Structure formats: structure tokens, C-alpha cells
Length: 484
Image 1: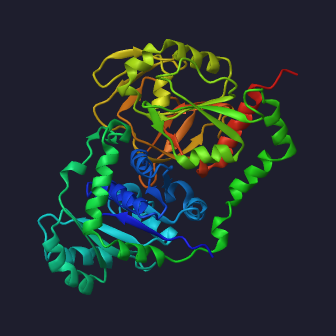
Image 2: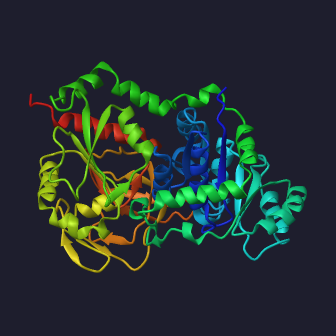
């Protein structure tokens, strides 16, 4: 059996303080020598960046819409087994899931699938005895799958309120009161159009986290928290086995033919590995850690570079990955780095396979608008302009299929899952794939695709169809092959 101590921090709604409290608790657990690992429920890039900045190790996303139950449990177990304790941060309200009318892919759904006890963070400002029926409502709403909520933290509350209500909360709701968090304005983080600002923009973040951890040590019962985590149900050993759809792809990649294709791409610089250039800096920082690790699992070596600061793409690479981020905040710097724009354009026009998502897709346009409505020339790989819109357009979970007519990385009959979330649009968003939202069935065409590339606004989750990214690597393997 796999003993995986764990708990989830969830809340009744967004804006309850989950991210900062999660970071503060992670810092406190790190200070205690507990070797924590962290996870974020749902398609979120920024919250895991905060987790990672605290821990100094990558944080991961877990999402039951993207991967279903078996693969979700595997992705959790494969990394959690190396940690002393695992902390998950919920998304939105505990039961808020796909379409706003289901609990699929909600924090509750992830807790149920991974059998993880939940600590509910409640904004208790202005409440006292009313907390009892409020909490009972959340507890009573739980399904017959089992009781996931096991504890509660009162946020923006006083020590006196916590002391006075502790016995009543525990007797009448059955939840353990883990403690309270006083009003801590110094630990708040500003937001922007896609959520919180990134941790790299906060100069004193580490100091704030240490201060927050110190406050939480005074007001939270960490021994009770650790006890709840320790009593989480053990996993069967097979939960750590790689899912069949991934192992089948791996067998192909590791076959003599697959290894031979990779070895033929080797140069003295890449030492026998299939090197993929990955754009990563202030402008391009939205990547799922498990996506990157799947690329490596399938035989790729990831070589990071900065479209802002470096002059050219790294040598010896066979493919290019440009993720999302905030290119609109760095449009001038990106545009002024003309040697990098030319380097990217030469590589793609020369046949290099590439994947570009959202911000990376914007970078490949002829022109891009920034947040002040200024226009800047970009790589010019794709015809058209990327422009700012006054509100979110296409956003939320989507399932994608390639349209008939020409070869794609996604073959007919297959799907891959992802999400969109952007305040920008394009004069040509692409039309080679068809996206459909769950529940509502709303759909649209998107993505510029070929058998060696895909570029569009959707953020893709590779584990929802490992064959997609395996084909990308196969095409990358052909890019540096000598001609017959």
C-alpha cells in the first residue's frame, strides 16, 4: 500500500483566501521539515507558481475533466509518493464544477477521486453563531460517496471568536476546528485581468510568506492538521502504475524504431536526446508541470530560452514549444528583440515542428496589441493580428477534435481536452480544430494545425491524449534527420 499523507484546502467561494493560506501553510510545513508537495485543482497556472516559489519545487495541477479518475489518481500518486505530505488547493467554491451546474472537476470531485480530506476555509468576518448552519449546509450537501470535509479554518476571524465557537462547531457539525486566521492585509496579493500577479513581480514575497507562516503557527493547530493528513486512506500499490494509454505510447517510443529515430537526430550538442526548445520567461510562463514531464517521459530533453532576453533560439533543437503567459505586458520588449523574432521565424519556416498556446500563439502573429492599445510587430509566422477585447470571450473547459481534410497531430476520431481563458482575440484564430464546451455544447472552430504543428488560443492538457504529443515528438525527430 502507498501511504500518502494529504489534505485539501478548499472554500465556499473564490476570494476566500485559499491561495495565500495555502502558501502560508506550505511554508510552515516546510519550516517544520515535513517535505511538502503541492497541487492545484483545475486549469490554473498562477497559483502553482506561488506554491513553487514557496517550496522551491514544481507544483502540479490535478483535474478530473482533463484526465478522468484513473489517470488523475496516477498523476497524484506518482509525485506524492516522494513527498512527506501533500497539500492540494481547491478551485472556486468546493462544489463548483463544469458548467456551473455540476460538481464534475470541482474541488469536491478531486477530493472524492483522490480520497483526500478537505479543510474548509471560511471567510468568517462578520459571522459568529451563523457559522454553524452555514457549515452544516456544506457538510449535509456531501454525497453518499463519503464525508470529505473534516476540518475548518476561520479566515479573517479573531482568537476570541475561535475560542467561543470551537466547542459548538465541533459538536454540531462534526468538523475539527483547525483554528483561525486574523486579518492580515500585508499578505494580500494584487490581481490583474487573468488573476493574481505572478510571484516574480513581488519583490518581498518570501518575506511575506515567512511572516504569514509565523502568524499561522500561532493561530492554527498544525498537530490536528497533520493528524488528518496522516489518517487519509492508503492507496493500493497499483495506483502508481502508469495508465495503459500512456504505457502503450511509451512502448512505441521505446521500441528499436522509436529509439533509432531519436538517435538519428542527435548532434554533438544534444548528446543523443531529442531536444525541444521551450520559451520560458516573464512573458511565457503558463505551463502544466505534468505536460512538461510527459514530454520528458516520451524521450524529449527540454531546453529553456527567453524570447525577451536571449538573442536566438538554442542550438540543436528539433521542435519548439511556446506556452501562454502575459506577452501583452512585454509586447515592446518582445518586438524589439528582432534577432529572436527572426530566429523563431526561420526555424518555423524551415519546417521545425511547433506547438503554440494562447500567448505563444499571439507571439507568432504579424502584430500584437498591448494593454495600452499600442501595436507591435511580432514574429509574423501566422498572418493576422492579435487584439485586445473588453471582456473574456471563449473561456472554460473544451474538448477538441481535428476537422477532416488534412493531416493533423490529432487524427480523426480522437479528442484532446483543454481550456481557453483570454482577453485577446485574433483576426484569424484558425479553423483546423473544432472546440466544444461541456454541458452547454457551445462550439467554435480554432487552431492553425498541420501534421507537425498546432497553434491557437486553447491550452492543451497532453495527458488527456498522449498520442497527440507523441506524434509531435515523432515529427520533431524527422526534422533533423539527414535526407535519404
